[in-house]
Amino acid sequence: MICNSPKETRELGRWVGAKAGPGTLLGLVGDLGAGKTQFVKGVAVGAGVPDENAVTSPTFVLMNLYAGRLRVAHFDLYRLDAVDLQALGFYDVLEDSLVVVEWADKVDAKRLGDHLRISFEVTGETSRSLVLEAHGPRSSGLLSAVSLGGTSGDAGPGG
Image 1: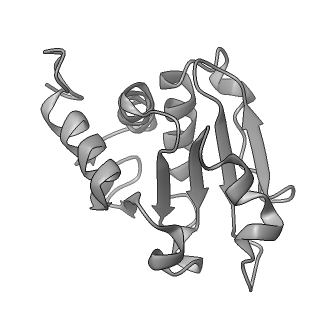
Image 2: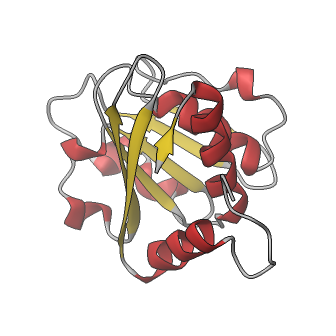
Image 3: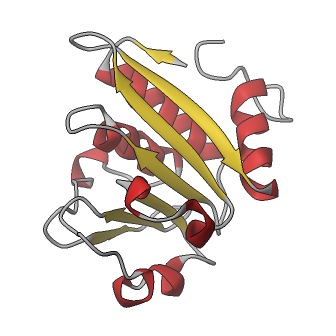
């Protein structure tokens, strides 16, 4: 998917957050400034978090929790050399939250389990290319819902 602005990146995130349920895991991969946190702002809004401005990158605290229709657990692994998911509280929030992990490439995909991996690539000053790849049945269902507009007949992002 191509997002031509931060607003479009947030809108795609909003769509994903609206279609996600408890136990959904999103693994975000991309360089600094590629739009990962903008995407998470949209995910949070889609999950019912009332203020996207409350969403910040948890680089120094490692995890932020946001309350909405669905609780969002937002991890940022940027500063970590070795990642201990258990020590971070990852498994404590996985089953009943929408979990978003920035810098997910620092963890073996097998350890993450069923997740939707979203790779961000800078393609211009404000444009980004996002590749969404499902790793398991739950994430495959989410990817289908996002790509096809879900079963409610809603038009998906850009459609």
